[in-house]
Length: 387
Image (tube, rainbow, N blue to C red):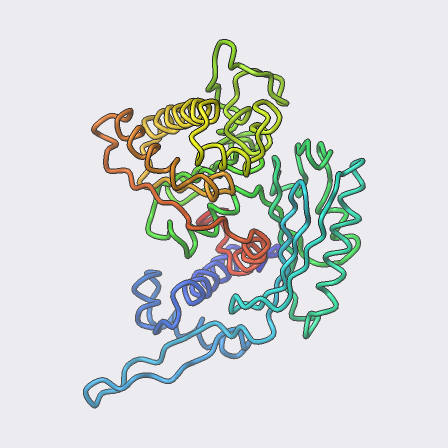
């Protein structure tokens, strides 16, 4: 939900309402007394806000549970009936879309595979095709709250532009403008690693964390940093680009598409592994299982470089949690992760030894996460949390 041009008192009223609405979304069922305790608002203010939300049919009262003959406070939940979001995962080899309701149920999923993007307008053909198919499945069009995008590349989420994505052939591409003009819906864009940080910090594995870092090893390498519950974008929206950490030296310092040499992504990503070492991920996995010397030596080199890079970042930012994900880890994580945990702990100072390392069992469906981005914005509190 967005705030228009309003007076200070009206803005405070709107912000307080969004705080309550977001708490009901993230922690519901929740009683009025708990809303007051968590927001610091008075009981009367909570009563006024709840009554307003009930009248607008945005929330519902549920049946209280009896406790020793005494009625407990009435729990409140979001009225998710007829509220929908579309999420699009825009990858190098495919475009995947999901239509979801606000109960996180998937109503329809569509995938269009891409042999190769020929020019900057080519990805739009696949995007339109996926969105148009999903729009046909929306039960009530007025209930669609927006379209969210997870994008492999550098994204300016404020302007709605893709700063740079070589695989998509985009540089300063006005994606939001094009889509809003065609569909007339709110459009939200985020880099894939940043989106994962938002979703996991909202109600996932990192919900209890104030300081965390996400590392995604996939076709490329993405990472994101959450500092004091705020996503760190950086001055030019390129904060957390672990893939371009200078990890390799000497004869291993291969030129990278960024223009530099020795970047972590030149070997520790699916694309780099193929381009510079001649292995597909499946071939690499098979060679490791068969103990081929070349693959084993390459694995040790990649693992040591990842461990050193992440250890340095942990030492610099002192996060509570770090989280690993991505198809690279899905495939060889059973061998990679134990080695990384051991080496990282040996490299970081004692003051950082309490860092918790989490591995997602499977790379999330990012089209569903992108639909979650729409929900996150709908329940967003202005000037708070991640925004």
